[in-house]
Figure 1 (cartoon, rainbow, N blue to C red):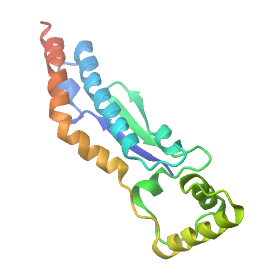
Figure 2 (tube, rainbow, N blue to C red):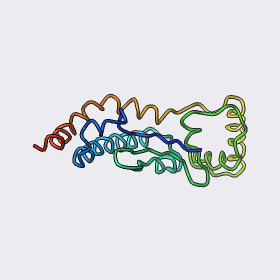
Figure 3 (cartoon, rainbow, N blue to C red):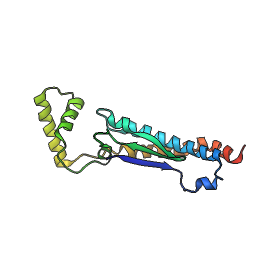
Figure 4 (cartoon, helix red, strand yellow):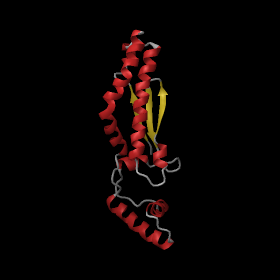
Length: 165
């Protein structure tokens, strides 16, 4: 399961209102790109970290001019980004995944100790589920506070592109 967050101009006819000049479109795309990259940066900083796969998977992609998305997967073979963002209901997680987490996160190397601790962690998840981490939501909240400044910084380029001055 992956998370896709679209970052695009709103209202959708903004480019038509700007006169659809190539320079204005490129300038608006610069703002949208800056927002997408800032969102990805903050999501990476807030993402839970064990192996680094989740943080590495948070990347901005351009869909088309003025439309970007920020995608978080986890890893290709085990897409878990959404579970980290939104949490889970109680369930028994895969034993191998929990044992690997115990080995890396808790720095335990004895096979019997890994199995014992992994069982305890799995039982806690089976009883309570995983708590949501909201790393993407927190990234949105962080960039929303600086969004006005980000747009203001790019606004002169947009105005020059529209007016030709």
